[in-house]
Structures are given as structure tokens and as C-alpha cells.
Image 1 (tube, rainbow, N blue to C red):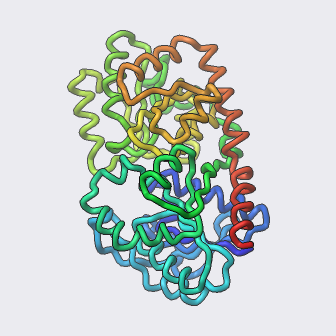
Image 2 (cartoon, rainbow, N blue to C red):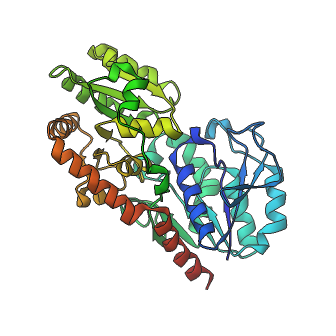
Image 3 (tube, rainbow, N blue to C red):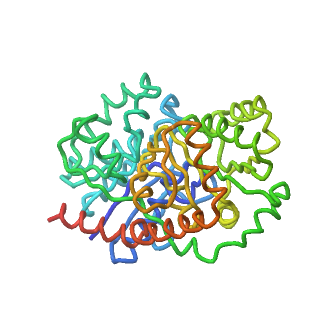
Length: 395
């Protein structure tokens, strides 16, 4: 079976978030199971760091990076990502593949890939990755609606299938909000568990940041933007700090559109800024140190189709507190791997107190979280499910 994945940005463009890593994890697992995987992408975030217009091997996955022209910046910081070279490659080669996978919506690579899929009658799957959640789609709707009506709606409705990474996303989006009648696939993002074995020592994080010594560490790891519920976290944490001196908040992630300054302002107004460490973007062993050295992971998002950072935290035996707007909250709740809250500061405060004051239950939550990841989110098991879907569609 030959699979072509067309995606606007790819490994190792870490600064653009977890979904890229999850897609690469899936591709790696598919290759290990005998699937011929090719990726067409652009050099966004990788300028002058990779070879263009030639195939390279990335962990067994055949990847070709194409240059792109940046315009229509109102769609995002990288624009529409128009690429003439990618267009020519699709025209030459798409007819030789069996199925096409498109894990993005708002970009030229997806739109041109759909055009050639329809021209050559190739089945294609669109993975929405949460971008059409009602809450997310209605934010900045003035710039999304025209593009959706001109391009994205037709691309999505004509897809052979739509891939959702959680049941919550499928229920909220497919027939009710988007009015889709094509096949809905519910398969989670996968994680390469071997990368979360042999974790750094717990004290490594405290050695890196001496201010964390003898503290119980509350970890937020993700993009610093409006959707992550950091306003809720600031209020809940401020209340916690005023009642105890053994806690410290560690915020890990890239700042988007200066939102981090707004968060710092809130913390300063609450008088707790000195009890918070902003670590910036971490990857590799430094990221693992953050997970391994923390006591609880929090993600009070207003909208989150899946939650890769939640799975990563559970892979490190870390108890989690997440909102019921995070796509995998039902799985976490059923496994008793953490606390599920509404987007409410009082509920977040209470959940943090319960975990921090009950070490044994915290350890048990961490163990149950790791087991949940092993059974449901390991990339090998996710790949098996995707292969069955691919085979069914091709037949």
C-alpha cells in the first residue's frame, strides 16, 4: 500500500505544536508495519536547514520539502503556503499512490492535493485536528468563513472520510455542526512510547531551575494563547499561593502573538509573578525533565480536540487536571488518571489541592495514566487501526 501524506509543515518544525509530532509518530509506525509512506510538505520553520525538492529519509519516512511563497497572511503567520514545486510533484506522482491523507485544512497544499485527488479519482482522508470545533471555528470567524466557503467546505464534504482524534470531536463536529454525510473515523493520535522510557531523574528539573527546590511543581505545557485557559489557571494558582508556600507554577511553551505578556500582567496583578517560571519552548530531554520533575499537569483549555501534551504527561506517570473541553477527557476520567473540571477557577483550585495533598492517590493516578497510554495511545496500536481504515477504503 502506498500512502501520500500532504501537510503544510512537518518534522522537525516543533514550534508549530504537537500535531506535527503525532502525525510523524503515525507515519513512523505505518512504515514499521510495511506501509510505503511519502510526505509532501513545505519548508515552513525550516528555512536553510533542509534540502529542497528532493526526497530525504526521516525515521524511515520518505519526506520531500518544497519551497513556498508567503502571501494571504491574514490566514496565519505563514500565509496560504502556495508552492509551485509541490503542485508539479502532485501532478506528476499522485496517480501512483493508493490513498492520500491530509492532516490540515487552512492551506494551499491541502487544497491543491484535493484537486488532484478528484482529478485522478484517488480516495483521500481529511484530519480536522480540532480546527473546526464550534468554539475554535467561531473565534475570528470573519477571516475563516470566506475561506471555508470558497475552499475548505468543498474539500471536506468531498472527502472519502473525515478523521477525528476523539469521540468528543466527532460528536461536536461531524453531522451536527458541519452537516457532513461522509464517513467519520475516530482514531486517537499516537505517541512513540519508547521516547518516554528511561526518564530523567526528578531532581534534574530542580537543578536546572534552583528556585524549584523543595517545591511541589504545577506544570502547564502547551502554546501560550487564549484557548488554553491560562486566565483560569492564573486565578486558581493565585488562590493556592496565598494559602501555601510549597508550590511553584512552571509554564512551558511558545508565546503566540504576545499573549505571554498578558499572562505575566495577570500574575503581577495577583502578586504571584515571582512564584512562576516561564521556561519557553522545551524539547528532547529538557521537555522530559519538565514532565518527570513535576507533581501535576494542568490544562484547563476552552477547546482542545485531543490533547497531545496530556498523553505525554500520562506517559511520564504524571497525574493530570484537564477541562471537559479537552477531547480525551472521557478516556482520562474512565481510567481515573486525573481530575476532569469545567473551565472554572474554583474547580481547578480544588483539584490541585486534592492531588498535591494526597501523594498516594497522585502516584496511583500517574500509574493508571501510563497504562491508559500503553493500551490506547501507543503509535503501533494507532497504526493498526489506521491500516484497517485504509484497506477498507481502498477495497
